[in-house]
Length: 202
View 1 (cartoon, one colour):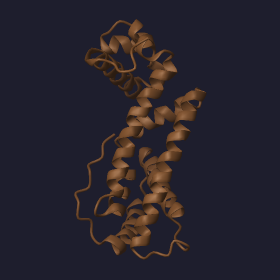
View 2 (view 1 turned 45 degrees about the vertical axis):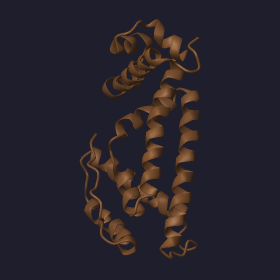
View 3 (view 1 turned 30 degrees about the vertical axis):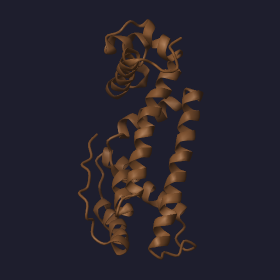
């Protein structure tokens, strides 16, 4: 087994394998992520997949954890920004990770270990949202009995996901108006957006 503290070469090889697995998931779907294909994509010996990660589920979980860590960092930055409501709204509407997230959701339906990892991350991610949003709403003098942060967060997230799903099959009736309502409410609390909205991509 590899040491608990990999050296530079081991880190490079591990990163190459994680990058390769992620690229394959995005291009061909999770079913394409086999040890041979990952190794070929990373241009390394297939045995290194098992050497560094063991079972394929472990490799896939590491790919997910790496992306999840980035999402937690971005969310923490959004909640700590000068306009956290705008930043949080823009973050949940960012489509950068959508394709990969959908692959992991599909994979979780077939792999119990992956499903457990998805759930554990989702709980941690949402708790951060609830705690941060509770603080923000309180600072703005919002009555959190009438506007529970949990409900506000799920409404924002739910609206974003639903609009994305409809957009994917070409339906956008009412989307502009719905976004306008959400952003009007945010504007009432934080004023006009002062930061540049991050460009989204698929």
